[in-house]
Image 1: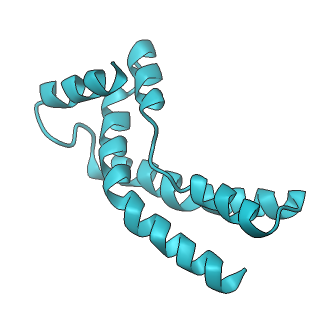
Image 2 (image 1 turned 90 degrees about the vertical axis):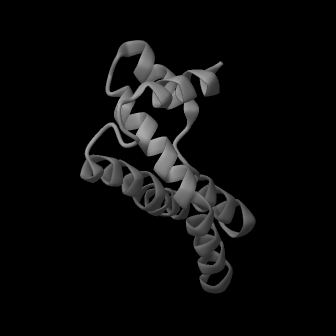
Length: 108
């Protein structure tokens, strides 16, 4: 139902990117780049090492969740920005996660 609601919301938008490109890119950059850095720092502080450290960091780089859209739609708090962020972060997720995987394999 959440995927259907997201698809319906995107289809009913007058244009593909409902919000400005700068807002969408900012939310995507925060999700894909700042999130893993914060997770890596927090994992290092806690003392995680090895595979668990890698998994925690890569999971932080996954795209924006559908549940974020459902909550935004339910409370009417910028669902257009969230839907655009989901689209962009899903498209950029695979190359970013592969880059993080390579970096983590070589430098940790």
